[in-house]
Image (tube, rainbow, N blue to C red; front, top):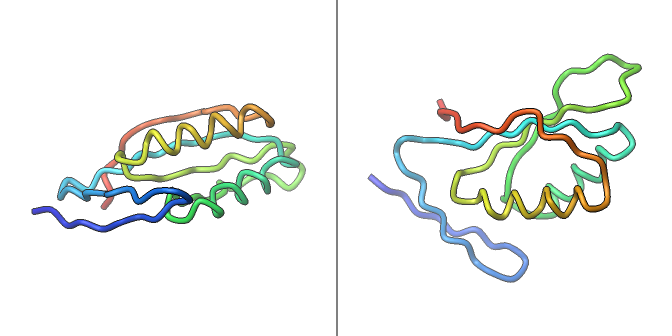
Length: 102
């Protein structure tokens, strides 16, 4: 069974097909604390591209680890967004995997 929805991005409409296997791509990235707000801003400004959460961290930590989720169909767009971010800011990909969305 397939359900379809449409995602509006800045200049195009991306047709997403959510297949019943309910898979998500999960990235965990590490960014310097002073750049984390820019990463959040970029992810939020690209409506419905991905959703994210900051992982727990010690108060004196100089880095933030952020978990990012997207559908596998949006991998290319997420990769391009992260690549563009890395052109200007430090970012390390700690994990990149496909998970079951339970």
